Image (cartoon, rainbow, N blue to C red; front, side, top):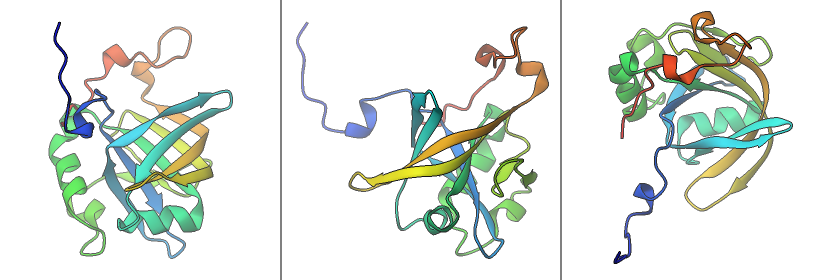
Length: 167
């Protein structure tokens, strides 16, 4: 098989999860943004990482509080995901605009998005600038899941979730 060079890095590691990261600033503002760079980075202790461009409104909220929530997005939220990923909190309260239901997390003050089937509360333990993004490494503090998604062992059965495939 003949191999050729791929020019667009963004296409080389697929699939990546389509997630919404939610956060709450010190001033009480809440926000959520679509994040393209995310993944597990440790299972003991459980940690995830999310990459956020420093110019994003949520970046400073996460920097100042050290908290965020990873929300897995179902296909049914495609339109809201697109909106939240294309607008800035600088201009409007996006969560109000598209009627996103949320409540404060159990372990962190950042909101969990109630229409998302899985929400992962995290506290920042480290971060690293990787070029265009700062990768926030979050220790998993609590995982919420819709009860109908759990198997007999209490694990999430991802085959029961129609996860968004936006890209």
